[in-house]
Amino acid sequence: MARVKQSEVNIGMVGHVDHGKTSLTKQLTGVWTDTHSEELKRGISIRLGYADCEIRKCPKCPEPEAYTVNPVCPRCGSKTRIIRKVSFVDAPGHETLMATMLSGASLMDGAILVIAANEECPQPQTKEHLMALDALGIKNIIIVQNKIDLVDEEKAKENYKQIKEFVKGTVAENAPIIPVSAHHGANIDVLLKAIEDFIPTPERDTELPPRMYVARSFDINKPGSEIKDLKGGVIGGSIIQGVLEVGKEIEIKPGLKVIEGNKTHWEPIITKITSLGVGGSKVKKAYPGGLVGVGTELDPALTKSDALSGSVAGEPGTLPETLDKITIKAHLLERIVGSKEELTIEPLKSNEVLMLNVGTATTVGVILSARNDIADIKLKLPICADKGDRVAMSRRVGSRWRLIGYGIIQ
Ligand SMILES: Nc1nc2c(ncn2[C@@H]2O[C@H](COP(=O)(O)OP(=O)(O)OP(=O)(O)O)[C@@H](O)[C@H]2O)c(=O)[nH]1
Image (cartoon, rainbow, N blue to C red; front, side, top):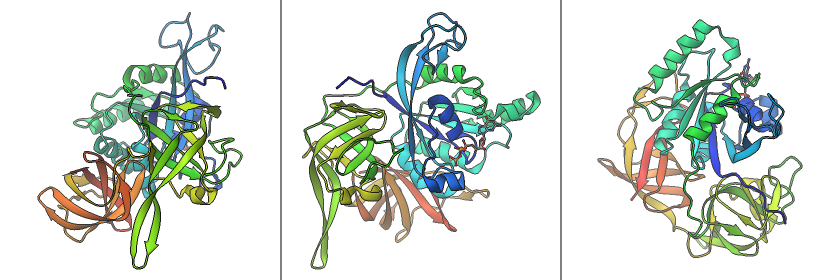
């Protein structure tokens, strides 16, 4: 089996609906990430999409023109050399899909915030996504001022000023702002250079026991699925530490719900890795970064329809505990930012219901008690998480879940 170069880093594509995340991903990778029939019909992204890109450099052209995704330099025809392979995680921008955006954010090492130049800035999910990056501790951010082809110079400058004003005092205050036309492929070289300069590959400890956040799970390999030619029940996601290897056992938690009389508990699943896929090729070992598909000995009925998404997989005996109750130290935002009218965020209250995102898991919890910034929460679906992990918290406002801040598991 040939050693396939794997993506080293996951870069989120975030921003308001229709600002051009999927178009920009396509421009950088050649992959249109909206592939499910419902997504094509509605013209919006619903699930997380992954797409790989090789950042390349021409040995002859000056910077930034030297940066390209093509094996041959479009300017001088020289053979380009690969600098880094990166994966884009395309998150949905629609306000009803914040849970998916938040599960995606847990996989991101950095992010591109896409803002359309032909609309007032900020739009509701431009703000909510930036708050989510902040809440989840994602600091390496690039701002793309997209659809630059649709505005004149004056409008572009005005929009630039609005962006600058909007990011003042946020985690993106010093982020570069790059004008781009995803549609026409304009300024992509400058963006690629910015990715190299501002979103470095995080240091990974491959000696640690392997651990993966499961983002998807499948029963069959549909044509067009990201995970090809793997057998058995397949799980897909990103490795956050260590190395997965064909032939080794893995444990998946929380696992299966077991009902005995009127009591229920969750039993971890143990299985064997039968195959591994990265970037459309089969490999013997898989490393952190990019989408990794794991073929297992599991009955595909167990992995059908994303049944195991939100789980944690890794070396048996090394995973965190499965928790059905957590205590968190809460950090609340000042205002709810995802809707047109911005509401002040009231303190957490006993008996209130929150949506919680931890890693790729989404669950609902009822607050048992809240005193100052500490809250005890009973979870409807358990999670596999460690002390110190971040939990994104959303509160129901009208008919939507709105991000209100984050908590740290105590
Ligand atoms: N003129 C112009 N149109 C663009 C550009 N980028 C995207 N569009 C158009 O804007 C619309 C939305 O683009 P998408 O890429 O689907 O937007 P998105 O942000 O991925 O949308 P969601 O994933 O559903 O949130 C499409 O009609 C694109 O063709 C651009 O640079 N210029």
